[in-house]
Amino acid sequence: MKFSCCSEMPAEALETIAGQGGLEGLLAALPDDATIARLRTFHHACADIYRIKILEMLTVQPLCACIIREGLGITKSKLSYHLKILQEAGMITGTAKGTWIVYGLTEYGEFCSSLNAKVAEDPANGDRDE
Image (tube, rainbow, N blue to C red; front, side, top):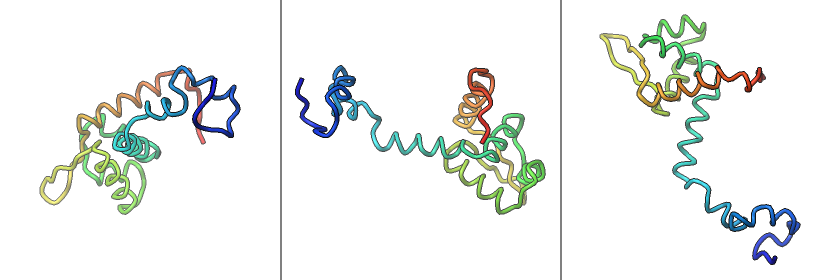
């Protein structure tokens, strides 16, 4: 079988993806760039211990920043950074209550938290701490 691309790749390697239309077919099956960007944002938001903890705290109930900060034992600037990432990812929202802000999960944040719960419950994931 002759392939139109990848002249440097062994034919045996290319044959493994022949059923997908070769490398071109495999690449065509990838999500578009906008979808990839959304996936990147999701994974980035969930790729930090503090942000996961914030999501878990907000799963229990909406909280003001001072309670979240005290619970995590971090500085205001560090908390602000993590809250901004979660807000930009669409996972949390802040509502002004006088001079302070109460943060809560969005519908998307609830969905993301449920994914985290499924991963946490799966014993097949093992203990993969860094």
